[in-house]
Image (cartoon, rainbow over all chains, first blue to last red):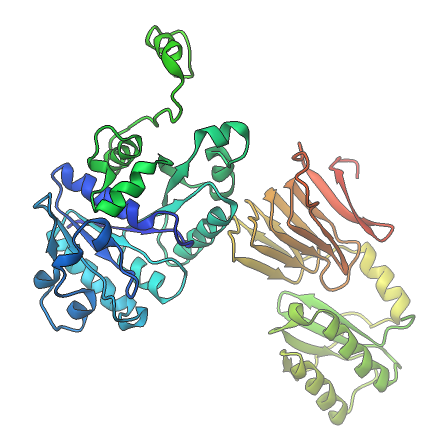
Length: 266
Length: 213
């Protein structure tokens, strides 16, 4: 029996879909059987980010309404044979599916896959309720902005009300230079409000935009810092203890000092 | 308002409406309407029971009270409750209320997140934070054993002696009875210790908490 993880945020545009694609791809990279479920019916994106748009024949609503078998709607990833996408319907609306139908779908997927990653739509209405139905765990994506953190807080409360406890926090688009100048909330400020476990910090990175447009998740890029941050999240999901990486490049002197155990916090 | 014709009190079962001995019924109706409309949202959904004084009310009068109560979205429980103590005229009652703290206290053993709220007739103690976007409304005092960053309304039924206490008092907005204050628009220094808010000379005043108070 696999594990179902919902990626949610409340606010739109904070990086739910990017995070879903990267965590899914990262898990597949580490030889897990993964299925990504796009629960954003009517505004599907996950297929585009993964570069699988042109392969869609059937979608989630077709499966729920039994126009096709589950297996027929699953699209195999370009790069990894162990990863599949269940795309959302683009021409339908959120209420085409009920939470009970979603729960059943997730149960069926868990029988076959190690990880079921559900990409949740923004908002707290029907689409959100559908996406969290059947989830065993929630990853909350936020950015260091007051509005995004406020919405994340609301989401945590709603998850608790739905008996989905112990959500994990991903802070996306952190800019160390702005944090240092005091122009951006730091991790401590965010933790003061949300008080949940932190599972990853993703630095703001232009290469994410490039990779998203190309349909190649940044987690595949071994040189990218944001890719490294996503690989760390994947390892933490697997249960490994991975230290949080230093977001700021402090230069040669600092690194040499650290090498000789003279400086730094660690 | 020098003489009060009716008093609304909260207890764990709901609200008790007491009608003063010898008060003209017209005044009772008018004051009830005024009190309910002053805190319309707070009273909404509550159950009201009647506690009549020694002068019994006629069925018609009870009907009229019930109509007013229902008009404000509350339920009227027709069974009159015998007064636990003789209902005294206004001045003594308010003085009496001031000295005796409200007994009912709700203990909340968690944090309130954005969108969550606690409404209670009595005191409220929160063992956790009150986050921005959440609210606590109490007819008595509010104590937050954590950071208060949302909205707090103490003494919501009109008790201006109510206080708000928090380990970190940084509310979005603070209300005590009908007094309202809000956080300054400019970010000031964070409070360093526990603080207490109370009404002093018609203004909500925040001071570091000292045990001797």
